[in-house]
Structure formats: structure tokens, C-alpha cells
Image 1 (cartoon, rainbow, N blue to C red):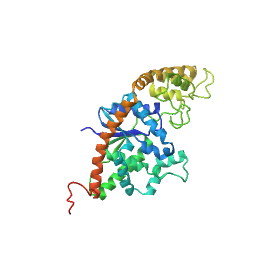
Image 2: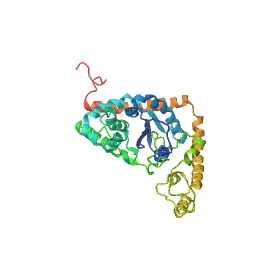
Image 3: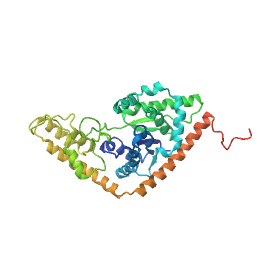
Image 4: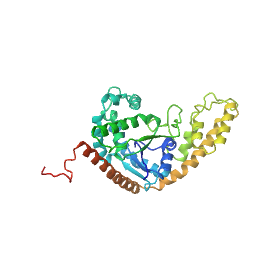
Length: 338
């Protein structure tokens, strides 16, 4: 049997080149060798988009279109919507009894995101508890492999803590621990050079961007403000154009040679941006064409089929969990008269 892998995205906007470099490519590779589940985490997205739910709802089909456009195959990867599987929420409720408030507050990823979103003292309870929801997602499908960025390692650690505690308390082994699969690619910097490429910061090149918009964004990319003349030596480190060439250009030797020349002086930013634009247009053209060929009806059908498959798996895990706790009161095997 193939190992189970679980991954997914919060549907809060279209996907961008950072997603392609960081996770989408590896998912396409993994789908031929893993039993892969890909979740549209709309419930988790609502923990900080609850007052803008329309954005989450409208993004779901856009994200699925991005998935298909880059090569994810619904015959090989089960694509499902989190909110349509209530079993995940029920598991979350049980798991909440196994985690203390102080444990959640110590989670470094949650702490960083609370600071970034400037919640202050008004942190939504759902947001603070979303690592427990993630544990439910992972364990519901008994995922052995969870592809994540390094910042998500504390989530896997908490999930495994929940598994161990549940199995110990209820003398069972129905829940499985998982292993993080770290991306080989570092997070792609935003085109402004100030932070990682992000939907919320709008500093990314999206998979759905037109050719004209891609060219415009490449021209605005941060390079080296001290590289005024072509003859001036330029800094490669922190240069966004080189970061994108490293991620998407297929000739490492050519890029290495350009870096050397840029560092010594004699290479202009215009030449580099022209090369990057050509590289990205070649990469994104077939993705755009595939996206344009998709229709809403087919995307909804993919959601429906994948979600029903995922739901049946989650139901089995929930049954095992409730049986271990002892709260399957109306199981057919019980003699109701007793």
C-alpha cells in the first residue's frame, strides 16, 4: 500500500509562483507515488477571514483551477473542501480536551502569526485553536507524510503529541503519528524584496496573471539600489531577480555566470529582467492556457467527488475515535435493550 500524504492551502486568493516553487511542484511529483489528499482549508481560513467570508468562498474554485493548471490530477490526488466534512470539526472538539491553553499560546508559529495580524488581546479563539484543527485533518486521513515549510514544524509536533496522548489514555493505536516533509525550495521572496511572496501583501506573481501583468511586475522587481551604472558591481544577495531565476530558470550554469558578471560589474538590470520575463512567460503560458480551458461545472464536480471520497475516510477514523472513547452509543453491534 502507498503511504498517505496530506497537504493543502487556505483559499484566500489565487496561488502564485511562491506556491509553485514551494509546494505545487512537489505535489505533482508525489501524486504518482503517494495516496495524496489535498485540502482546501476554508474552515481554517475563516479563523481570520470570518468577516470577509466571500473572499474565501470565491477563492475555492480559483485555487482548484490553479491545481489542475500546474498538473495535479484529480484521478491521482483527492481534492476536497474542509468545511464539507463535519467529521473533522467533531474530531477537533475531542482533541481540544487534550491540549492546554498555555500549550497553544507557546506555539511559535501561532505567536508569530498573531503578531503579524496585529490581533493584540482580541485573538479569535478559532485562530488560537487552528493547530488542533490541523491535527484533526492529519489524523482523519492517517497521513504519514505532511509536506510543510519549516515554520509549520510546530504544528506537526503538536499533532503527534495529541496522537500519543489519545492513544495512551484510551489504550488504542487508532491514531497515527506523521512525519513532516520539508520543501527543498526556500520560500520565495516577494517582488518588493521586503517579505515572502504573499497573497495578502500582493507582492507576488500569480499563476493567473496575464502576460502583460507578469512583464510589468518583473520590471518593478527589487534588485540592488546601489547598482546605478552597468559598470557598477552589483549585489546578488537579496536581489529578487536572481532569486526568481534560481527558482525557475533551467540553466544553472548560465545563472552562475550571470551572477559572477553582475558582481564584478558590466551587467545591467534590464538584461536580467528581460531574461527573467522570458523565463516566466515560457513557464506560465501553458498554465494560463490550461486554466482558460476549465469551466466551473467541471471544477465543482471535482470538488464533489473528492470531498465525498475524503468524507468516507474521515468517517471511519471518527468511528474508531468515538469507539475508543466509548461514545458510539447507537452502534448496530450494541444490544439496545441492555
